Length: 200
Image (cartoon, rainbow, N blue to C red):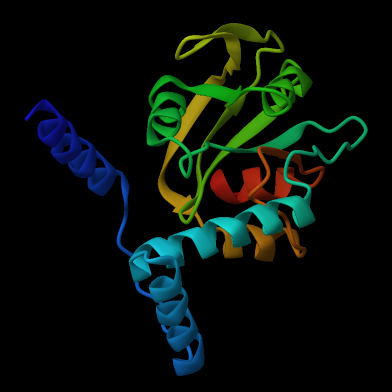
């Protein structure tokens, strides 16, 4: 009976973590997915989720998402709040005026932030939601039970934006493309974004 209770609890937990999303696809692709689901004896949802996960891995590898774009004397950074991996990370940063990253090599991005550098916090699917200035002092704390796997800096003059600036708008302001999926990217022309935020 305990096994049954565990299965039910686990099933409820997994369902809470999943988000519904609708996608339109060609009939041929849907037919292939249904056939693959039958072949693997899995649900269509499980097969689609696995295919999407594999596609995301390939995209991450191709985009070199763990690499920081080094820009000499860069004083502006865009930091992804990690919402797609853990909503608590996003909430922690925005609620506390913190720039944080987790585990190697991503946590090392925080060490690049110098005192006075402007850090824009970017939320996937929403845009730049906040910004502040780095302290230049990287602090460390445990990530769950993993020692010192969170590197963070407290941001001064922190401001959460009432109206986020969407990725498309940031690209328009800068007049160029920028990869928001990386943990952190240097944007040497970030003053343009800051000017728009401040209404200049």
